[in-house]
Length: 268
View 1 (cartoon, rainbow, N blue to C red):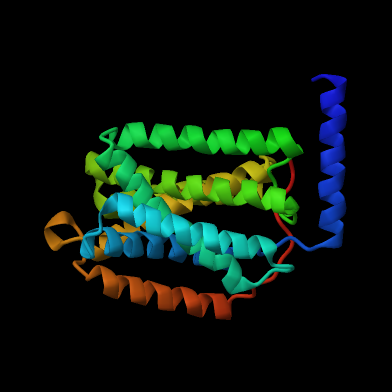
View 2: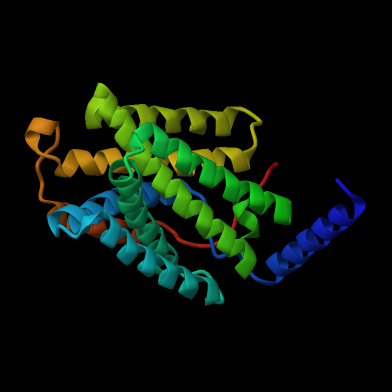
């Protein structure tokens, strides 16, 4: 790396570190409660996204535009906020999951690239965002999410990870495993990541993003299992009812589980 580039990167990292010392990160502490709420948020995104695109019959493109607009608005509010607020954080997470649901469906179905093509396309987008984030700031740890620039990278990565997770969940369910089988596969993957966290020295940042991605298809398959017809392996709940129930559970968990900023995976 050229000396000029190294110096610029060092200055940017020092700036981020200084701001992080002055302002607490606006990402909640990563605990068991965090992951439970995250899975509920992804499940809500699946049922909520399907409610608008399918039940209300607005289609994937119009639904994606609606949720993308809501996501941009909520992320903007989150970025200008001076400190961490639980509901202010989780609202754009839900918006990213609903937008991810409809955008993934649009890419895999309306564009005709299929689940494999859509998954690879979205994976490339996610890797590009994370790579640009690391190249620009020298870290992709959520510990540094305390400046507008880092928050922009963070929410872009989250949106692509949520969209990728939707495509992966649909792809695996479509292979013949069904929604229950797909949920078990992704739950097993999360169990492996948890074991790696406690018993290995694998990068905590890598494990965090891997778990963040895998919780999305887990929630997507659970959401599909709840609202799909019986002949498709689901419970045949109405999508609006499932959305209300999951949203209520999520709100209860946000109120019950401690929500505070700090203590994030940051070992490179």
